[in-house]
Amino acid sequence: MPPRDRSALSEEEALQAFDDFLVESPALVSTLRRELGEGLLDHSPASLVPLWEWFLEREQSRSREPGPLPSWYLPDPPELVAERLSPGTLRDVDAIGRYVAEVFLRNVPGAEWGIARLPERLRYAHQNKPVVKIGDWDVDPVGIVYANAVRVALFGEEPAPDALLLTYEANLG
Image 1 (cartoon, rainbow, N blue to C red):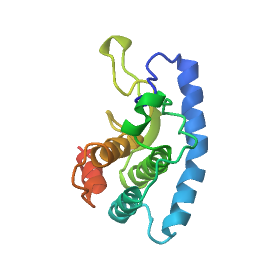
Image 2 (image 1 turned 120 degrees about the vertical axis):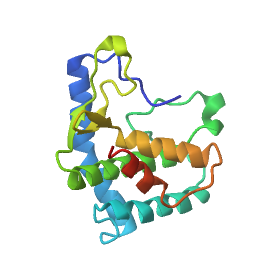
Image 3 (image 1 turned 90 degrees about the horizontal axis):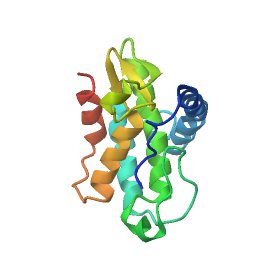
Image 4 (image 1 turned 90 degrees about the vertical axis):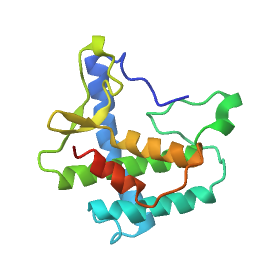
């Protein structure tokens, strides 16, 4: 299954999901920083390269271990589990996405957390998701990491150590 579709959430439900997301973020980023070393993840855009290299190396030796899924991901039907990212990969994607958000928030003037919203008739792909708002632009940091992980882990694309940094830069407009 793909990430949860948040488009049908009421404004109150979206706000609660957003608040829950923000409450979880510091602990996930802190755990990630401890795993990689406090000095390596300094919230600079350049830190996205060693972070992604760590993920790529970890992904090469990852097993398909079961475990909890991030709140934004729906459980897969049993027949599709082997064709999807593992729970461990999804947990890493979640933590890395939240770190990427911190990189945006600390390095892009005016960047701030928000909830993606457009009129329902526009069927906005990010509707009701926690995003980093940069002016009128909504950046889905977890989505950025998820898309890069899918390209490498499921589609077999050549792992590029700077893929996360390039995606970050592309979202600066």
